[in-house]
Image (cartoon, rainbow, N blue to C red; front, side, top):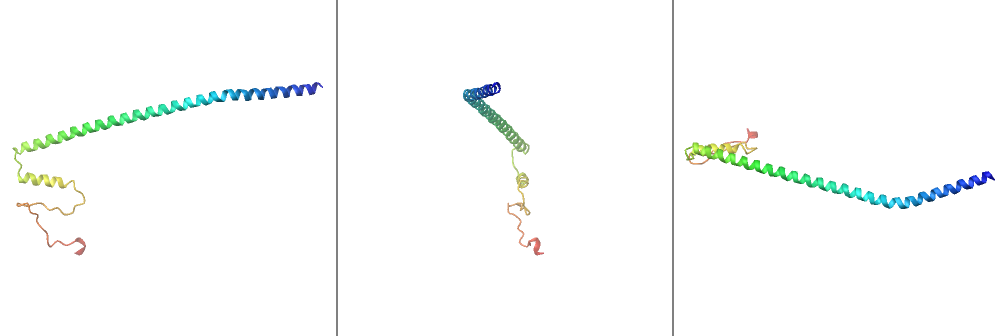
Length: 134
């Protein structure tokens, strides 16, 4: 009978251990859920704070770029004013033609450019044939 008592005691201890584990889990799980939610909230707050800092840095970079663009525009205007001053305050037709030709460099995919002559009329090419008609 000693063996039967031993088995009974071992079974009672096993049942008690399982009951203690179940009670411990019932107590610990709510605390774990609260802790997990707190950690999740901290992570979201840190992410929001980082996103705010990124937006602030982007705004600062945009402001700096606008300041630099404004400075470039001021320098361009100073250059234009200096060019006019060098021309003694008068803009000649030759200078206007130069500016017009220089502006044409900004246009792409142009194969024919008509430059105004003395009366600001282009020279027309009535006999010009397309390249593949030759």
